[in-house]
View 1 (cartoon, rainbow, N blue to C red):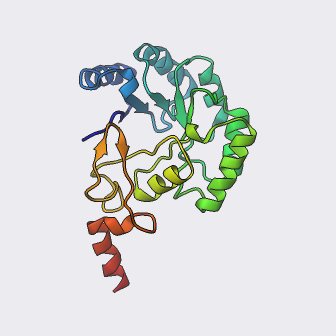
View 2 (cartoon, rainbow, N blue to C red):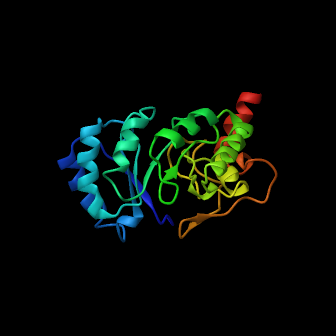
Length: 213
């Protein structure tokens, strides 16, 4: 499908997840092409167990191991895991993000921030968040929005973020990108139209028109 990095869920049991990760690594070229996401399921002890087991695979990232508002877990985990981590999809305001940056142990040279543009109180609040991050020495390239939709893609491109997640075939008709623009080597183009690109998604436009009528 043209993607260079894929992501899988973890958090049922370490033994089972290691088998699943190793199966995935038989398909993708290397650990750098695979990210894992615990969806906040793990307590600190379990998160550290996972960290120790995952480190050798050199994964693209280890995402949201513990409760997204438990910054102490995130900060402690950074002491036990040298590879990239990611979190932030459940933080919505600049103040939330500032607390993560201050107290969550996130490392601005290797970790990723995942605030979803569409959920973060709008574009103005997202701009405030980026300004705050710059003051703390973070590059906008460390931001990869959660939420695989055309709105986040346009914002990611316009604000020079590090990328955007994609969920092909999921959360339709809103999920995914413009019709007839292929993903090539992990990159996708933007439609040459005004707006956020919803107009290029035929199935979505059917739904929107039906509501308007």
